[in-house]
Length: 222
Image 1 (cartoon, rainbow, N blue to C red):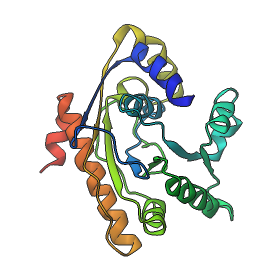
Image 2 (cartoon, rainbow, N blue to C red):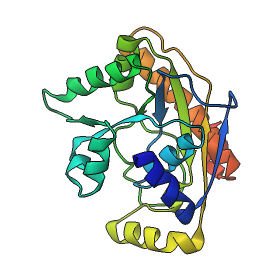
Image 3 (spheres, rainbow, N blue to C red):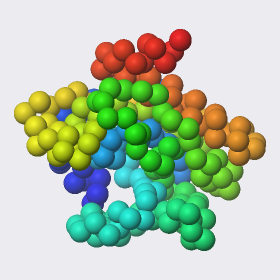
């Protein structure tokens, strides 16, 4: 349901294109790891994945379940709330591992938060949290890196700018691009695996940014 809503809304906000190193959808039971830059990018990512017939289980901060309408969509879709900094935080990984075992795709954001920047430009992913590594090690699932670019052109910055961005996006219709890299198996060790996951997502993000002609992609490659 949430993916269908995203697929209906995102084309009104921007022009979305999707590419994949493997030319198709990730294998069932994969962990899809995306970079997080904007309040708009979860919708962008879900809309892009639905074009590949993928409707993932999403790990997201538990506070979103308290948002009217969105909370009901998350609950109905079987998505997984993450109660950060509590004893319940580990429960999310167990629920996600069970979904992977059942053949579902699981979508997780490596950074776990939005960047603090107020500009609308692209930048490489920030440091990742360790949950990806722990989920990959517990489940044995491959990690599919997903890079998205352009969502900050829909909305970013201060609260006023966020609202203005959403309201003007249908007229501006900025370009959005999502790129899926080839699956990787993370190395042993949480720290090494976390670094490897970030590097893979950075490579996928760089490809997405290049599709939009973003100068940050060239700078990140140096």
